[in-house]
Length: 271
Image 1 (cartoon, rainbow, N blue to C red):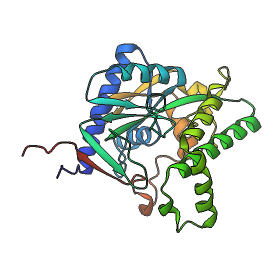
Image 2: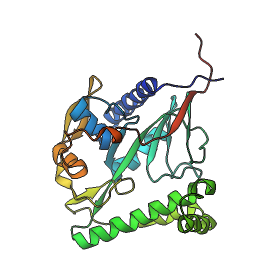
Image 3: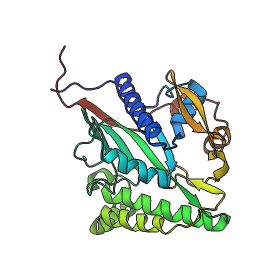
Image 4: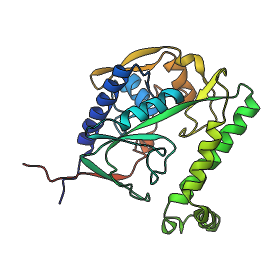
């Protein structure tokens, strides 16, 4: 049986992925930022949030597309997954995977070649008008939830109520690829490059936030697990927008990971 990877080792593998990504971005002049819980961890803990188990980065959509195309051409242990590259990939953002590992997530179909990963999120521009911004945020969220229901196994929804179960049955008729394409088409038509508001709209846990473009005009280096990585200049404002009093630890019952997975090495390791 292949070795099951413990949490501390998973984190080391993820740092390896981050260092590889960092080297590629420096080589090709691409600007990226730590984001979400990874950025919060850098500020509050100078590393991983103790109960967290992943790494998140973000970059503007044009750089995101450029980075994916560059990573797709590399011949290393690290493989890029994106819906533009793989017809069996059902996320609206990319993942950079260590191909020497394999990973199994609960209630999620297995993706061929999937392993321990780093999340890469695109930053999109949103309308300056608040009503239009909220309308777009809500529309994208609905599509994201629809994709979730079109992917999740029906047997995992039997105790979630008839409405959710019936909704999943209906959207599965269309299939997740249909809703991925619909969402991507919508995003391609966005033309708010002069807007003052941005967000990782395809992945935000709570999309109804007002994230200002000016916070990303420059980057600053912050320590994460003993090394410096780029963060947005306005990281304090960004973290307040996401978490409020971000230096305050959550209640003990909420200090848990939001992922449920088992990671293994593809090949049995020598001891």
